[in-house]
Amino acid sequence: MTDLWTAETIRLREALWGPLEDSAEVRQARAEGHGFVQRLLLRARLLARRESLDKVLRQWQRVARLALLAMLAAAALAGIGTALSALGDGARSINLNIALATTLGIHSFTLLLWLFSLAIGRGQGGAWLGEAWLWLTRKLARGPDAALAPTALVSLLGRNSSLRWGLGSISHLLWLVLLISMLLALTALLATRSHTFHWETTILPDEAFVSLTGILGWLPSQLGFQMPTESMIRASRNAGSAPAYVHALWTSWLIGCIVTYGLLPRLLAFIVSILLARLNLSSLTLDDALPSYADLRYRLMPSSERTGIDSPLAPEFLPSTASSPNALSMAVASAIVGIELAPDTPWPPAPLASCTDLGIIDTRAQRHHVLDHLQKHRAEKLLIVCDARQTPDRGTIALIADLAGLAQQPAVALIGPRTDALPAGNASSASQAAPRQRQWRQKLTAAGFTDAQIHDAPQAAADWLNADAKEPA
Image (tube, rainbow, N blue to C red; front, top):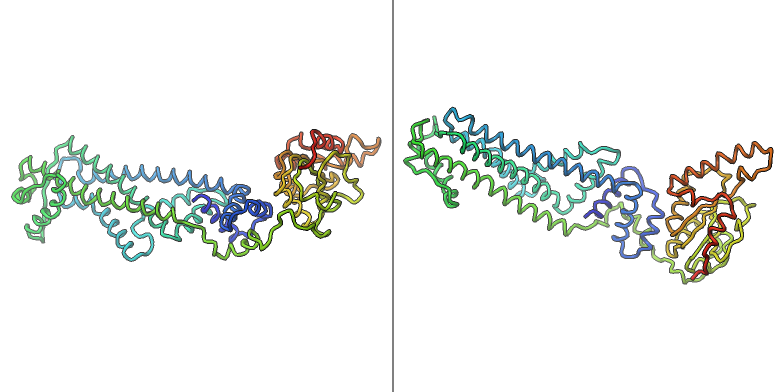
């Protein structure tokens, strides 16, 4: 479920703000194998982690739980308030008609509306409290991407009726809490105060209320609640005209009606909703036929993929100055690669022991080829050589991060003039070199490199790479 939600969130974000740069994520998804849906889910998971969307989803989940707890507390308070409204302070006789309408009126209306919506098969009718919870979570969520989480969830769950049953279960749960708190409050009030009951009518004959009371009381009587007899019902026509034990029977009748026509139907609706919601969630799948996924199918499931045992690549697709045509088809123990080095830069920058030379990356094709190779044959040690005389840009730092993620022990060598190695009196070169060195170190540190992984002397970088070097397998 979480993976499907993540994939839908990524799909909506790309639909709203354009495709994300996902070369590394697509490469890793292809390397993992499996089918298109599995690769699509892995790509979404990797992109969500990179873009911090996974944190957005977790934050929305926390907000949703807090919103639900707040609404449950409000429902409990509403139930207590309903009980107080129905019984009053005990100073006056309670009109049974009004008490029953107060306790079950709105509940019965919303339950019937929910049943009607099921019959016609449209919308979330009757699940108003569930929709109110969803609206509240959207209002409480903060951040530029916060609205994506509930929108993606609604879009995902709406495909197989999971949303209807999910919101219905939340609505029924809130009603259950309200009814239970109301019953507890009614019981407490009836146990601690003396209340009298009566009924009144102006336009209806007395027989109408007697018959209605008998009909409503039949089902609660089957559950063990005591019901007043016909003579007792007639004796309660006017306030205070019935004896005390009759009022006790009216108490049983009122509570029995609330349990039978309020609590039990709502409990049944909650159980049905949550079971169907779980059933639909278990059958929820990713709709890979959506237009948003059409372009990704070719990239994630190319018609042919390299296995590392085909004939050597054409020269234009090999990294420049590669040590041998077969170097990229072997497992890598230690490797070195350069990024956009000047033509006059010596390569390799220092004497190296046994090491796989991945060459210098100057073109997009070379970049993809080296990343594809390292995805299949991860290096134990990888030295990434950069020209410290150039200004580090976001694209270069991103490429370094992608390369570093494919090695167990990555390091960066900054090749260029060091301030402590410049000729005496060359103040202008020193003033230019020092800021560039600082910029490189700042950006590399922000990308996750430690000081020990950044070398500004070719020989120091070579010594690190040569340490414990072993022949590639």
